Structure formats: C-alpha cells, structure tokens
Amino acid sequence: MRPGVGKGVVRPACSEADIAAREWLAGQMAGAGLEPRYDPVGNLFGLARAERSLLVGSHTDSQPEGGWLDGALGTIAGLEIARAARAAGGPPVSVVSFQDEEGRFGVTTGSSVWAGTLPLADADARADGDGVTFAGARARMAQLAGDFIDPGRFSGFLEMHIEQGPWLYEAGEALGVVTDIVGIRDMEITFEGDQNHAGTTPMHRRRDAFQALADFNARINAGLGEIATPRTVWTIGQVVLHPGAHSIVPGRAVFSMQWRDDDAGRLDRMEAVIRDAAGAIAAERGLVVRFGDMLGLEPVPMDTGLQAELAAAAQEQAPGRWRHLPSGALHDAANAARLMPAAMLFVPSIDGISHAFAEDTDEADLVTGLRALAGAVSRLAP
Ligand code: GLV
Ligand code: MN
Ligand code: MN
Image (cartoon, rainbow, N blue to C red; front, side, top):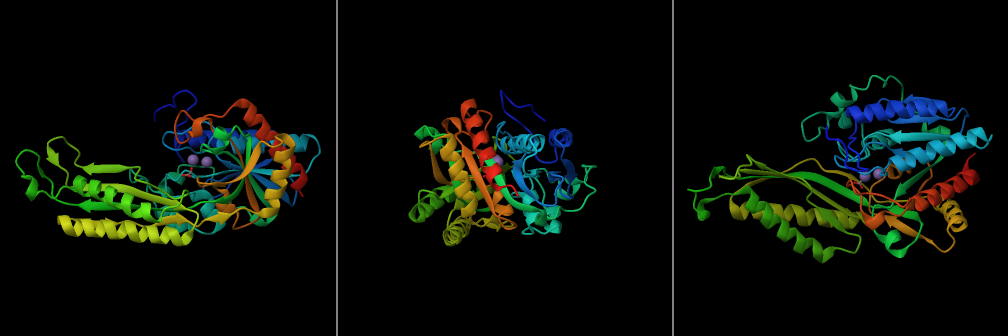
C-alpha cells in the first residue's frame, strides 16, 4: 500500500494501516479511562463507565487517497473531550470510530449496519474493486469478538468534521453548524460492446464501449443540468476499460455513477435520467448495458435541539464567524440520527480541498472547533 504524501493518509477500511490505527486508538481509549469495545463490523467504541453517556466521534478509515483530518479529526476530538471530562470529573462521554465510512465496501458501511439500515449479510456480500468481500476483510480483524453496542446507552451523537467544501473558508468563518446531510445514490454501470483491432476496424463497424461512455456523459450532463439545483452533484469517479490497451477498441466499460441531492424525489428523477440515457445509448450503438446494485442513503436533517447547543457554543467561541450550513459530504451522523438525536460541527477546509492528500485546516480553526465542541458537550452530556 502506498504511503500518504505530505499530510496525506492511505488507510482504507480493514487494511493493515486501518487495523493498526484501531489498535492504537483502543489503547488511547483505555488510557483515557474508557472501555474499548469492537463490534462485529469493526466499529470501535470507547465506552464511558456510566449507564448513559453522550457519544462523540467519527471515523478513522480513509479514501484510497485521503487527508489527515477527514474523520480522524472528529474521532480524536471526541477522545480528548472524553479524557478531559473524565479527568475533571465532568459528564460521561463515550467515543467512537465507525468502520468503512469512506465506502470501500459501499456507503458508510459500519454505521449503516449499526443503525440497522444495512443488514449484516448484505454488507458481508459487498466487494471492493479487487473482489475482496467485506466478510473476508473483517475476518482479518481478530478483535471482532463482541456484540453490537446497545445504542440505548447513548443520549445523543455529536460529530466534528472538516467541511470538505469551500464555503466557510471563502467567507473567512471559523465554524459551521450542520442543518442536514445530503442524500446519495451510487451504482456501477457496464457498457458491453465488441473488443476489436484498433487499426483495422472501420469506425462504422465499431461497438466501442468508451465511445458509449463518452456519449453517456454528455447526455447526462445535459439532462441532469435541467433538473439540478446548486446542491445537486453527480460524479463518474472510476472507469475501467477492458482490456485497456492502445491498439484495442475497448469492448467493455465499467464505471461508477454517483449522484447526490438534498431532495429524495430529485434523486429518483436523476436516476430516471441516468437509466434512460444509458438505455438509449446502448440501443443506438448496439451495445448491452447492465446496471449494478443501487446503494444509497436518504437525506437526513440534524437534530434541532443539538444544533441549538452547537450554535450557542459556536457563537461563544467565534462570535459572528459561524453559520448554519448543509453537508454535501456523507457522514456517520446520518446513520446515528436513526438511533438518537445527532448533530455535526464543521471547521473550514483550506481551499475547500478534501479526499486528496492536500486536505488541511488552519490550526487556529482546529482549536476553535475543539473548544466549541467541548462547550456543547458540557451543556449536553447527561
Ligand atoms: C464521504 O466521505 C463522502 O463520500 O461524502
Ligand atoms: Mn469523513
Ligand atoms: Mn470522506
């Protein structure tokens, strides 16, 4: 596995680096007076020694090329707040690092299974791009002997995170209180054409899978553009052409198709545009199109009571330099919200960069964020 560049991180779920990082984190939890507990999917909890506690955390897995703060910030912030609260005889705070938030095996796998929106058997059957299943990957984690943690022991969930977008940074603001988390749909699409010789096959006889994909991209850009709002986004982030050689007309294109919006109805209308475009292009060009399983999360509002506490803490730490804002990124808080009141606090991302080694946040903003989170926790913890 490649090392990160600069502050970059390469720590996909269930990789050696992820397993080692969880073991390190479990040790830190124990050192902070918490009880480290893995659940069957690798979510790692640091439980406060109290019947009821506030849960604070995020995730510590990364994208194939990720930044140092995406997820780790909220996890380490939770750990420090729990440690400090315990040392000061303050309210009980538990910590969590959810597994596979970044979706090596889908979309927010660990917190989805915990929240009951993804059956464990379905998660286990999912495979990454190399065909490794989640069942096989989690079997590498010898620590996964325990049961799922009862969500009833937590009074709520707070997640601190980098914004991963440009809005706070461009406005010179320090903090964001999240109103809602965007919904997402994600599936694999395959165009199957004819593999043939790139020198001898006349253009009119080709069934070129890449040309179909290029045409598809132009058509969805036009079609989705007609129904998009400023929050609507869509991405083809991964493409595999088969067999992938300069002198071969590609016979197969397998690609990811992901789209996000804050409105579930619009997500459905986008799906119709995507399926129609792919179907029409396949018919026109004499190819076969196949659609993979649809993964997704619905748009989720954050708890208004918790938002109010975060807003009060933000105003205290950064008067006039914070705002309410929606999240275009996915977060484990979207799943936790199905189990308990949940809310999120954002700090700015320099130049709005994330899911890249260049991701970073000014240290002063990290400190302001931690202080605001601690302020909210002290008001909220049972
Ligand atoms: C999670 O990081 C996402 O893709 O939004
Ligand atoms: Mn994240
Ligand atoms: Mn991420």
